[in-house]
Amino acid sequence: MPVLDRGFIFGDGVYELVPAYARIPFRLDEHLARLERSLEAVRIRNPYRREQWRDLVAQLIERQPYEDQGVYLQVTRGVAKRDHAFPKDVAPTVFMMANPLVAPPAALVEAGAAAVTAEDWRWLRCDVKSISLVANCLLRQLSAEVGAAETILFRDGRLTEASASNVFIVRDGAILAPPKSNLILPGITYDVVVELARADGIPVQLRDIAREEVFAADEVWVTSSSREVLAIVSLDGRPVGNGRPGPMFRRMYRLYQDFKEKVMRAGRERAAA
Image (cartoon, rainbow, N blue to C red; front, side, top):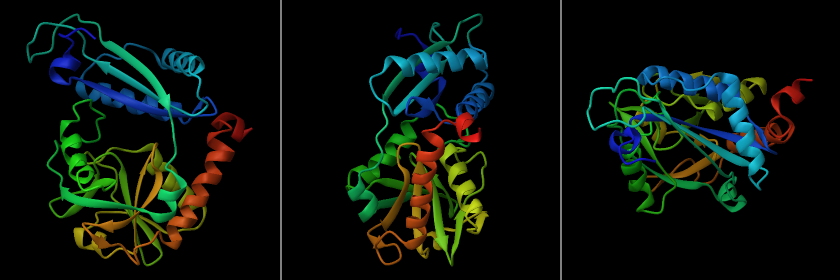
């Protein structure tokens, strides 16, 4: 990337991470729609049509040796002299790569993970998948330095998300999560968890969640493409529930793994056939 690319100079760009199972991208249209929304929000011209993005993703996946992949797409505003104002007539820069997509190890799933909490002082457009992630990195480092898996964030006493994942809690047999807004990333895995819960008859509430509710929760989970669904069993050094992954987590984990084998690995179109 040229040193005067605005992604390098300003973090002026957006990205997507598309999971591919058995070389088939999962919910690619949803990921590309989110990319389009991010590009529109920061006023970067989309360099490709939807079908062109599909072709590029397919070509990249085909060239890799791994069956399960995380396909990373990044679009910056392009190369121009350093000036905060947008340059005119500059072509966006596109960068793509793919890495192995590895699920959390069985031992971690069985034991659960620790997390810490912090105030969410990031900008007010967390729904934009911006490459300007220094705030997320600083917040994630708080948990990394104490050997925890995540930093769960609160803004004005309300749960938002974690530094690199969405957050769910379980109280009295219901799954609760913050509703989508400008303060959280609209996660694709978040959508899957909500869909699976509702299809299995589990009550779901999407509403504001107070900090006190999180600490009093029976269970706490984090979700993302790479973490899938992971139980948090310790929060700021205090046990969540009985300090072990709970029964609702185990139920959702089974549902998610079944969905991954029957739908994600089969491809959405094939599964619907």
